[in-house]
Image 1 (cartoon, helix red, strand yellow):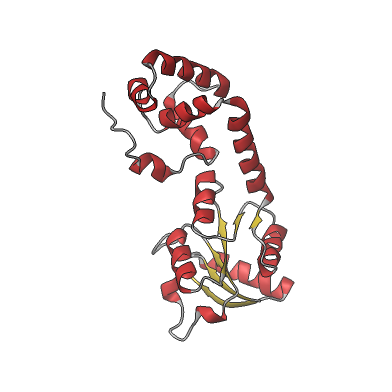
Image 2 (cartoon, rainbow, N blue to C red):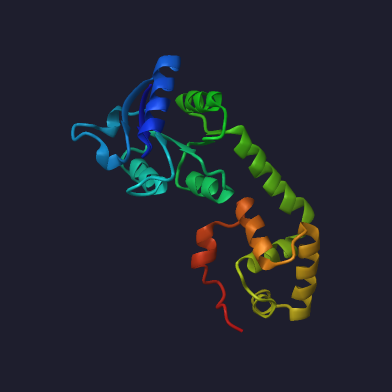
Length: 218
């Protein structure tokens, strides 16, 4: 298996390259800081798996992922990152990543991930799988469908009057929902709801920044 490794820290690249080649016998064709740093003669046609960090100096790992999937959709992409934020994980998977492993995970998990991708299987490190499962179970089991709807709007920063207009109900009803949501999730502010929404993957940062479902004005 031929691997492309992209990480902007040379010591990290060298360590992973050595581990992959000496311990497991796979070939790291290129270990570079960005796609632009690839030699002129390099071709993604020769690559089976690309291992990408999300935080890169020149562009984000997400942008790099998009470029690789567009130019060579047959290349399996594994995100290897220090970020275990569900929003990042969800975004990576939506953009076509075939696997995601945190740098806090055991070394064996990286190898398990590469083996899975070699078998055309997706892979999430165990710490991520547990986090995703807990987040989904937490909201699905605790909140009603209407409360989840109100929860997401509150997490985005909208006020009860705006939410009442949007879901066609009375502001007092929204206030009751808000009280129940705060109690069930053990928070005291909309910021607390935003944190939970991001951690569980129900919202991504871009959902909050660019959402125009409602006009945030009274």
